[in-house]
Image (cartoon, rainbow, N blue to C red; front, side, top):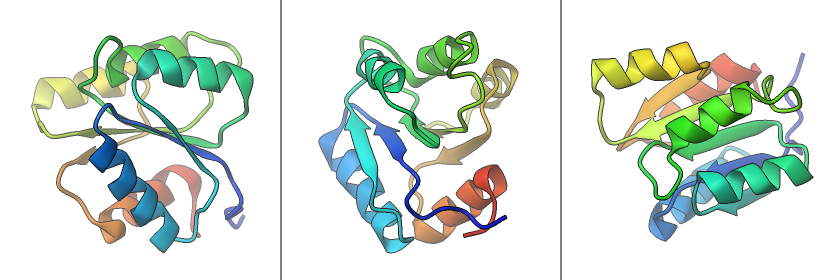
Length: 128
């Protein structure tokens, strides 16, 4: 099944520059329906008010981390199936294991490029 390029993606990061970078990478890949949230709590609010096809979230944020957001989503009947890609600057094995146990669909370590993002997204949502 082909991926709908009109799908809505939520990117979550407390660093505005990173939001801009991810948005630009997604645009390069052909995705234009991109919303932003500055932390997990803001993301949760958006997720509860609109349907998203994919969440791409940073791990380290205050007051609510990407890991806490993931756990909240996986315990919510409406959000538990939403694909989730975690982005982090740290490739600690225990973080990867914790994220997998919490139900993350994939994991990206910074820095990354459009090709890496495409590969990770394809593994989660299929070819596009």
